[in-house]
Image 1 (cartoon, protein in one colour):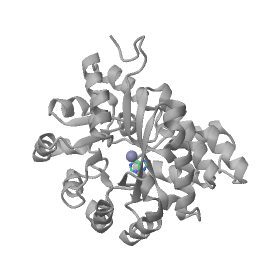
Image 2 (cartoon, helix red, strand yellow):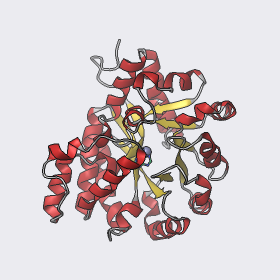
Image 3 (tube, protein in one colour):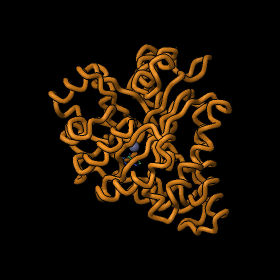
Length: 326
Ligand code: ADE
Ligand code: ZN
């Protein structure tokens, strides 16, 4: 039996998805036209040819540059709606969606415009696509702690729409501890906490995200495998890790999908999930990642089922709703 059986893709939750990373070339050009923004690429094909990355930073450069087309509430609603339509086709029943407010406020787009636009699409998602949703507001770790604090304060009027805070962007040289204060404020405000750690950065950043930021989940975390004590702790505490296989290959975190540590992570008893990260850039949405690991790593139906169940176990859904998917 395969994941893409007659019954369609496995029902799953997507827990590591940057909404700005779902901006497909077609929508980027449409929004550029609508907003009178000139892109440094003549055609969609020319843009697509730029999707070849040496590392995380080379991807981030393009990711932030393309965001110039996102200006109005409608733009953010259209972006999120396009993602949700794709996600439904991929068996996604619940999505916890990152956004990067500082990447927009830096361009003069208020955080309220971003949140209201995204929320407009998310509020219709259950009815339109059968997908429940949460929003996760990420701080850019290569910006200052003060900027993160100012962003959190600017977002306070919108916190009722936000389930968690996260930490993303260029990892190496930007350890989690710098954001201790803003994560403490978020926790006090009743938000969950997550952080990218152990993608390009060392296992030490995963320890720090757990011990200093008190995160509920680790995003990526694949480099935890370099630290036996850390693996033992993550397994004992069942800390969820939101792994993104196709992203890891495209950003050269690993050389080849066939060498991905996912099987070793499962064998170690870690609560791992499979996610798409920035699907417009990395060649696949949620189920494309499931299919890719099935083919490259030889996962059987039981393993894929475990990954799908893990995605709900690791979600911020309330216990009763989570149970319905397990
Ligand atoms: N922002 C968007 N995608 C990211 C990733 N994979 N790592 C860090 N920051 C990101
Ligand atoms: Zn990510």
